[in-house]
Image (cartoon, rainbow, N blue to C red; front, side, top):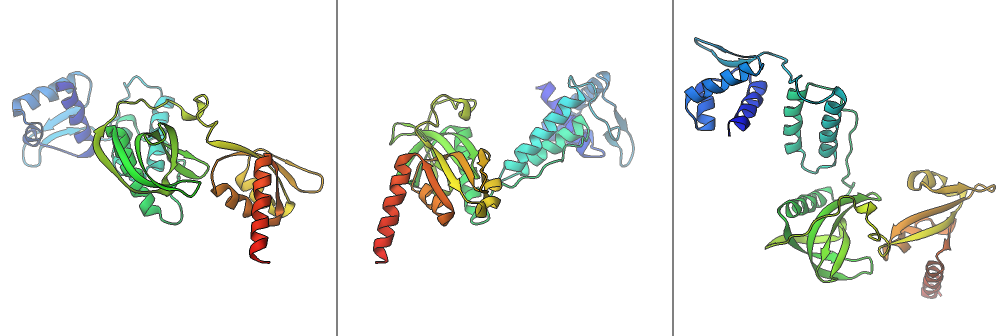
Length: 300
């Protein structure tokens, strides 16, 4: 299409100082006469494209040109560039978003949008998690079913077959949200527990919710609300790890938070040692008490 070709010509001219009509005709597989007509169309539209003859001549665009006539306010331009930078920040493979960002910077003009840098990979096996992340991303975009081995919070290691719908970041971890064929329901899968993931040729036709955290009842069966009393010795962790807390007169804290159900939660609570007491729910208090008794039996 001519419109697409015209925009791509602008991209090329913005990235290169000069290009010949022959180079453009070979790239787009059209005649040089067609390229000349395209350049004339751009000039008529107000794009400052010009041609120079002789050795080293060719087609150029005025330096520092930006598309000021775009139907966007300066605030909207800045928001677009900031959004692309945000995508770049959370991506494990940022090369493609960097190309888009460079093109948009050229078109919209360089704005002061480089205000944040984020790395969501963990300190440990970041390379393996990046590979899993990119494979799931590809499966979501191509709507392909994935198979993998998964270590659940209950200590189960089961092969799963899932229609992946979304990658989700919550509580310092990446999750895949999708339809689990084994459970016949929608589930979250922590990326660090996903092993040996691969796509199969089978496609699916399911739509992802626009905003997972706003969907009714999505988290209800997967999360548990904990109420804990934590001593002042753990104050540094209170401010690092919690939002909803109240400081008592003795310096201790009452903390209320939501966590995914699973075996891991007992390991997390025990990381506070004797400085933490679970107040609610009662079934968690009871389970911790039983575990402590079993531990004491091991040392009797």
